[in-house]
Image (cartoon, rainbow, N blue to C red):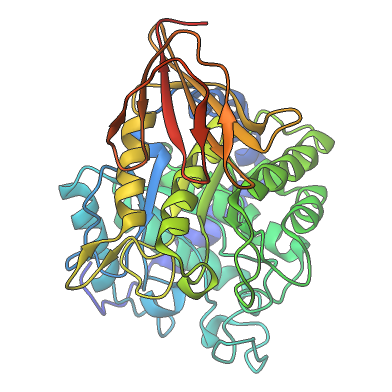
Length: 422
């Protein structure tokens, strides 16, 4: 199918799939749900854990090791501007670049086109009219069918919506979102059984409902039946105020896990499909940005988050890791360094504040070697567990001599290597 081609047989196919759902499709998909979840919850580091966003797949491909990417500019409204008329050019480019770089492509559904909206005249904050209103379910099913048919084997996962707890992206209810998931899940699985389907990605900065409150309502309405993975966006607070410390991610994750436990879904993996400090103006100091990105990836990884997607590699205003003309920022170099630190490791315990201290500690093992990443959340402190220390690596990758004395610690994380497991 080429760009602009009108697909005429999609409607009948989607209708047939809808009838299939009403009979026995979901039961068949659920039978493999537990096994699939276990497969997605790998304890050790895999490169797919490191996810990225970039504005352009051809101009600014991220220059560090990563394994997963979410495309920009490929919303439903952009791909199907009129019913049955598809412009696949942008997403074709993303798919080709992802394949050429051996990176998984993770599509996110967003933006109901006005022609498909059940409330086409409804205004949305910061968006065009009709962008967030729930779609007609048959139009939705036809789009999902066309999308997955074209990109079978090229798109690895499908995120059911972007930040539905933010009124700028979705003005329907959690129950209406479950209705979309109930139509989309069996369509995706019937066309591409290997594809992963996530819940809508709730945002930690969403309003009027918090990320955990919206997810609670979604799962209460039955949304857990139509997901292989729980998706969430982990940011450091609202983008209209200074960034909060990245240590707060731990509480966001705890809130998510409490909701999953409430609904008997603790076995499902969690992906942080978008996050960071937010706008650069929220955290203008470049040293603080570098420390933030290191902590962000570490806290996600050690808390068992299966994937974490940084936002955004080349955006000049949001979470910038690379700039046109000057190249990788200090934060970009820190991201490159933390990937090296994590490579080949398994998390021993979540990053946590040591009792009676401002020091945070993350424990990793690689083979028989123990590593600790430590930093201070409040001024300089001293790390005293120095027995067996053989090397200290700074955030910039340089080595620091060790004399077996207490190690000074600042807000910049350091990697401490021990002689064997402790």
